[in-house]
Image (cartoon, rainbow, N blue to C red; front, top):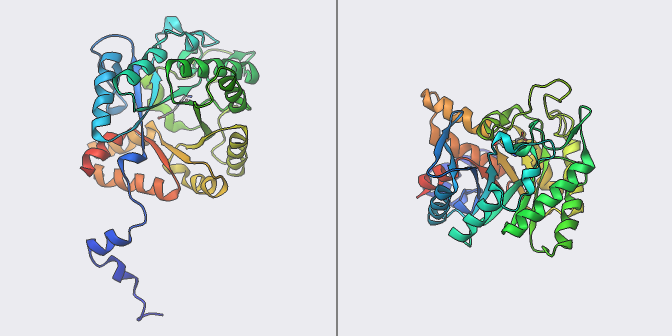
Length: 329
Ligand code: PBG
């Protein structure tokens, strides 16, 4: 075809590039993770996540108003629980007056239109740092799902729009869906962490919430019996398809950038929206490289997010959301 066909014609100026661009990042793409702590006036930077903070509820209130003003429309809530409230069953997770339940109300009162999603898993509440109940060195599946269902109902009662189970127990989407229906929460959605890998990229997040698995005899040191093996691809499709069949409204692939092959595969396979979680370790890597002057922070940030969206993400959970919106405006 050459020289009649020259692909570079479509790259010749910024205007033609804008005209034919296939993927565009907007504030509507983002789900903003928020880390919440007890107290007042607290805004503490997470050491392994520069420029990202744990905040007390009074400051969360200000933060969500600011996010809404900026054009961001959805938050994903996580709480840091004091050690004395942790136990094996994560009992504090279903306290109607717990930090998560109060956080949901605070956000919904401050900004009623802000979409509130909540993390559903036991790890921040577990004395062992596991997503489920531990017995005889195992993570109990069905018993954990029952607690996750109660936790989901409790979040719905507090006003959550979506619950986001991040635990990887089998069958928990169905158990949660049925519990929500029974309690009259037909309109509360489920965003399932469907293809969640046992990844070393979650390190900074576990620092932020003090939620890493503990180093005690007979307690599993990692989450590999429930989170997926990084080597597997077909398993991700099966996991995701099952979650859709059980009633997930949105499915998720996590982490993001290292798993974009999986994102595309899932996108081709299911017809519900696909979310991608660009996780704490991905954030930390870019911040560290940029701090040393080794990478151009903003350019690499945008390139990574474009890649995630191009791969098939309809929703992106990202610690960069505010940085992006500032850059775009
Ligand atoms: C809790 C949960 C984790 C993340 C989101 N929800 C940690 C884990 O599974 O150990 C990780 C998010 C991140 O690294 O940014 N189950």
